[in-house]
Structures are given as C-alpha cells and as structure tokens.
Length: 313
Image (tube, rainbow, N blue to C red):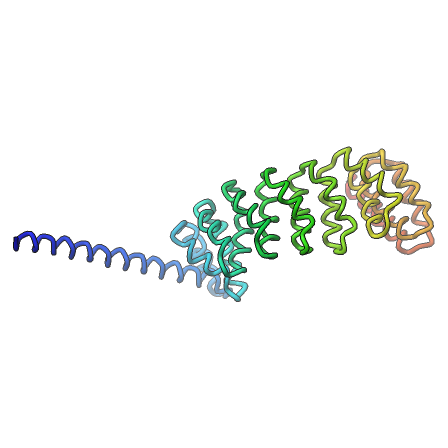
C-alpha cells in the first residue's frame, strides 16, 4: 500500500515538473516574441537591422505569435498597430482562425483590422464570417469586411455587397462599391448606378469606377438611357463613365455634349474623350475644345490630350 502511494506521488510530482517546465518554456517564448515585436516596431533608425531580423523571426514564429500580435491591433500607438498588421500578414494562413475569432472582439479596432487582414490572406475560409460581419457588424467592421470580401475574390459575397450599397454609412457604401468593381460581376451593375446620385462624392466616384471595371454592354446601355435626363451631379459621372467604358458607340453622345451650353458638361465630355486611345476624330474634337471660352473646358481638354499622348507613347 505504501509502495503504491509512493509510486503515485512520484507520478504526480513528475507531472507537475512537466507543467512547470512547459509553462516556463511558453513564458520564455512569449518573452522573445514581445522582445522581437518591440525591436520591429521601435521606429529607431539605429535599430533598423535588428528590427528587420526581428520581423523575420516573428514571421517564423507562426501560430505562437498570433494571439499576442492580434492584441496589439488595439493599441493607440499607430506604429505598433501597423507592425502587428505586417507580422500577421507575413504569418498568413496560420493566423486565419484567430483573426476570424477576433471579428467578434469587443475592441472595435481589433475587430475591424482583423477583417482587413483577412482580406490579404486570400484564404476562402474567411468568406462566410466576413459576410456575416459585413451585414451585422458595427459600421467600422461592416466597412472593413466589405473591403476584405473584394480582395478575397469570391463572387458568393456579391449579394451581401449589393445589400451594403444601401447602408446608412458612406464608408460602407464606398467600400462595397469598390469590392464589387473588383469582383466584376454583372449583377452589381444596376445597383451601382443608383450610387451615382449619392450624397457623398467619394461614393459616387467609386461607383463610377466600379461600373467601368465591370465593362459590359449592359452598363453602356443604362448610361446612355439615363444621361440626358439625369440631374447633376449624377449627370457628370454618367458622362465620364461613357468615356471610361471605352465603347465608340458613346462617341455621338459625347460629341453632342461638347456643344452644350453648360461649361461643366462640355468639360466633363472632354474628360470622357480622354479614354479613347488612337482615335484621330477624338483628338480633333479635343483640339477644337482648346479654343473654348471656359477655362474649365480648356483644362479638361488639355488634360485629355496629354493622356492620349502618354498612352500612345
């Protein structure tokens, strides 16, 4: 009996020694991770070489360093935050499960930055949780999730992003439009047109660019049908879009706008014509506009001619 108790005691003691050994090892490794992070984020020119070595060591730590790095995303020191982002991107797939969990973090900075970093991993496992975040998160998280979904390139996110175009927050609408332009899915064309009359210039401009990237006959047809009756500022974006689509079927309409009584409309028509490379007729129209009595029109004509020259060079 006494022998059994002694044997059990030895087993328990060995187990406790192992716990102490591994916990000490973990503490030591965490200390190294903190030390490397401090070097990498020091921002001191004298520590540049040490900082570069520390970055490589952090990346090689992989999963071990991820929880600590995610915790640094909530710091007020922007240098620390950017260094943590950099390290997490370098770690890649090993960081993805932790970043997905961080989408639910109570610290809004950690959650929204985790969403953005997930977009740079190109790991499709992040798509479903990011879709949830894009729909139900707080504003900053919704915006970051919309941005990340565009970078991941999965068209399964298109319906969620289309819904986000009607969000009450301008940054969410803008980043949803940006991502739809990246995904180049024709389902987004008509919803994107609705943003050309948005109250935010940044949203309107991003939607215009997104439609031009999808680049379809459907977009041209809608733009031609809407442009004559559209009110400003939507009309200006539609005119430039007609050029950005680079379809010569738009040229008669753009030539008509060069004769408009409004200098703004004539100027934006000149800007649109700057997209038509290698077309002598377009070049002649722009040269004629250099004699316009409006400085705005002259400036737009000069800029477009410069663009045509650079593209031809």
